[in-house]
Length: 137
Image (cartoon, rainbow, N blue to C red):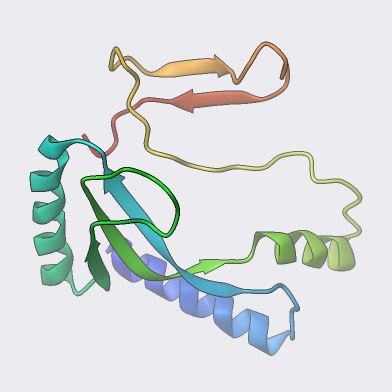
């Protein structure tokens, strides 16, 4: 169900970008899950099997397209990226003068395995993070 919803959403976004001729540099890219731990490799192999059964486009990787030391990675192919274009579209269609908030997600595990919620740094009083929930653990 999750995969189907994501695929339908991707198709909807692509159709609307085309229909309304939105110049947003929409790109289809791969999304990566990766592990630096040997213990994570077995979990990733199970994930590959599950993706195969569900018909999810995926590729097993031993390296990332950027410099990082990893044990294994799973690339989920054909994801959409269009953040800069969303800002321009919002400004052109809704008169947005300033982007006040952005959101990003990463699956991080803290050293003590206790989630962290708080300020990003003492120098960034208005940037907060909530991380370390062990989503993939």
